[in-house]
Length: 99
Image 1: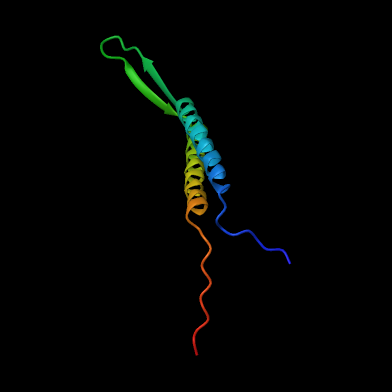
Image 2 (image 1 turned 180 degrees about the vertical axis):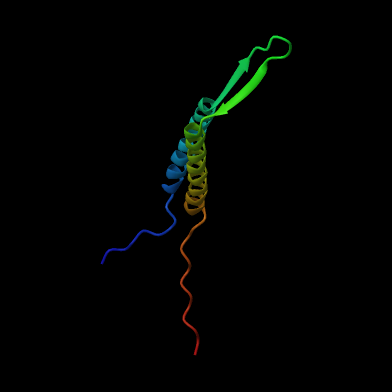
């Protein structure tokens, strides 16, 4: 009979660290995608201030939002993994009742 491993496994802390590192990398990717998705134009006008215009590219903004969501999920799972690495311990077996 094989026994399944319990919830408390210290190696889960390593998994949490990898997930946090991946979330940080995703944060850089989010900033890069968002920067590519916002284009600012300036058109000179003869009698005044230049006309400013902003164009948003939906594919880049959508990719940034998707990557940010994935990073958030990774951070949530990293917290769960860390708690399971530190806190989850087996329960002590209860004594049989005195009858």
